[in-house]
Length: 236
Ligand SMILES: C[S@@+](CC[C@H](N)C(=O)[O-])C[C@H]1O[C@@H](n2cnc3c(N)ncnc32)[C@H](O)[C@@H]1O
Image (cartoon, rainbow, N blue to C red; front, side):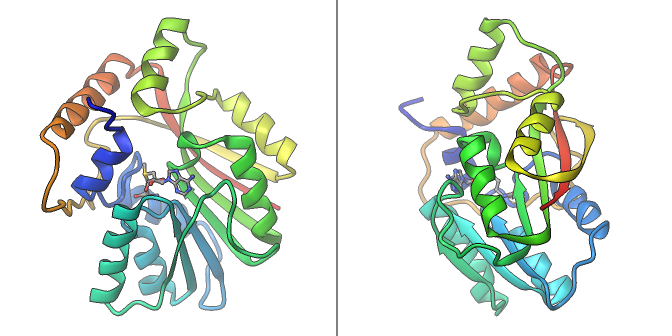
């Protein structure tokens, strides 16, 4: 694929709600939380900013988007400018978050931890949360231990360093210091049951990216009984 990654595909296609379960699952997850206009919220790895925009439009909260990929940043910035949303967008890594300790009431990671060093990123998310703050995530999870061949195929395609079972998530969250952890299981499916799916194509994109979309679909079909995702909520 000439070095192109799954994230390149998401960025160039401008997929909004680029996480399993899509925008509808985001809204359900947020409904369970006590978000107000006084809340400080970090959407870590915000992609094209669909959730960040919703957090401002729905709650008038103080929303901050953090994102590493320049194409994602540009698309999120355009979204916020077009809709005149006062969301602060910062380019940086979830593994080294450019905010002070105890800044946020809520920190979100919607399908971002999968792609980074999880212990490092969780430590950072924990650091920038206020005491009693809530961590909300939607992350890929495996349902059972994989053969090394299965593991290699999935890890190489998504360029991820590890695939976690639910018990691994619990362990790593506990080790980070989170408590009151709840995980709910959702199957991964190709269309995501996503009513809010958006596309915002880049003017130029490599035709090879269609191959990545195709491969993503093949992996979801092949591993439909092995790959799933969890809505994870916990408290600092
Ligand atoms: C699957 S997408 C999800 C985007 C967004 N959260 C959503 O649900 O639409 C993963 C996002 O994480 C971003 N990302 C990957 N590594 C990152 C890092 N180290 N720091 C911040 N963002 C990162 C990618 O650029 C991409 O936008």
